[in-house]
Image (tube, rainbow, N blue to C red; front, side):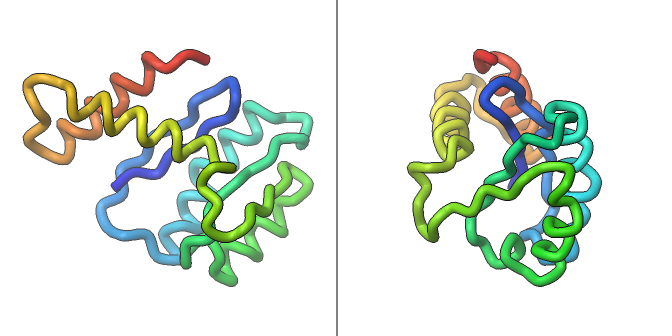
Length: 125
């Protein structure tokens, strides 16, 4: 499993997750990866962060962290079960399709991560 962040113009880090994210692991991702991406790409504080309503995303600790950083960027509240509003869904689908077409196929999780990073770097910005 991977976590990804992007904007209309920039691709952020692609983070390999060893296990299913919990609230605490998601909080680490926000503080270690999202905050630096948003600070660099949207230093004016006008960037918007959109996430789905997965349990770790809606947790009290994640919600509190996002509220504490609301001056750094805004949280875009999307309606539940509305993937058509989330550009990351389109990127994920395109990456999965491209990975399936690669030869030779990936054999390990690290091979898959490398393939995803390679393919992602080819996306237009």
